[in-house]
Length: 414
Ligand code: SAM
Image 1 (spheres, rainbow, N blue to C red):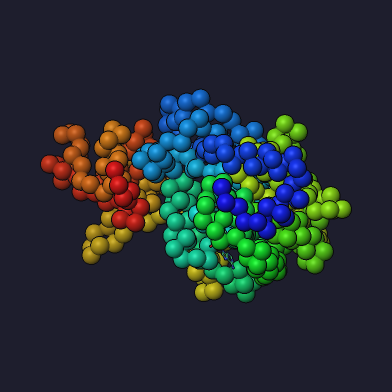
Image 2: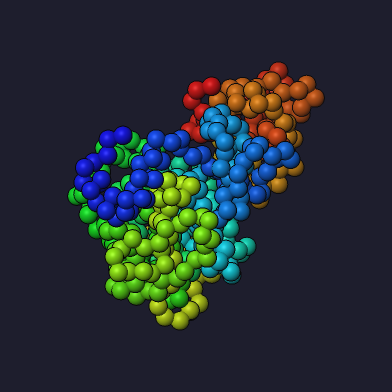
């Protein structure tokens, strides 16, 4: 393990001797694997045997080993999402603080770990806008959100300041900020190579810009959740302090249990409630999270969750990639049903015949190969499933079924 010298000097002092030693030992140990189940898409048999519950997230589990997720059809059916246990702390935060339907924005959302969690946990009647500024990453976000299947989402591809111009007001904004990634060093050796003190300072500046740009879009009394996957106080406590003092917010506590071993503020003489997941101390990769409430009394949102879709479609400033309504593709005069439709929780699947595939067939389907379906399968469009969970469509010609799985979702190697 080749950690940068400046990182060692700073972080060992920040953690203190014991926590630093535990952190170093964790580097030698095995990386942890955890997943979060999608309660709307569970097959009748448990997907993972002997999984250990993550105590701060109802549907989160640690696995005993890391399976080949790419080859598991249930991952592609949206039955679960692979996520760090620390990130699942958002479940605890939302359950405790968000009790009524909200218009929520996940500003830095790709690949979609926190957005898929938020969408599963927000009270019914809420609308989630999942936004990603990077186009390539926005496509991955779109894929992950469509696979999870929830309809009350809008996927957007905008800069933070674009929202500012729309005059939208959100009840809840999550800023899971781009950061120096110190908390991922154990898993991602590239993050180690890219680290420098200059980059930490650059990240802090960019985080404050993002926060300042989006702040006017949070309604008075609205919640802001700020998170990073890094350890230094510049990108964490000091930014939370900045939000409180410069933007105008109070910092809210979240209930935790001592046996979770979550660490509080590491900024000297500043003991506000913030939540740190430190490898070796907490069973997770690194994560920092804080919950804030904007000063002022709660006012009605400028748009209600139910009408957000209409506003987004009408608003030319918003680059909308998906409005939550999965549609067929029009090819000439023919309407071709899409995988996004088959995967949507709102889609009336009984409109089409459904065929359950074996594991091997399902993997070949995800590899975009033609299939041969049982002889009695009707000709035409058919939904193919694995363990009764929809994967997508084929067009059954009788002697073979043509594969309609999206090219950019296909698994590359079998
Ligand atoms: N929330 C995601 C999840 O849980 O799967 C991870 C988000 S990642 C930590 C930060 C994201 O911020 C990246 O997808 C990155 O493209 C995006 N980003 C980078 N620069 C940005 C900026 N200036 N404004 C907003 N988002 C930015």
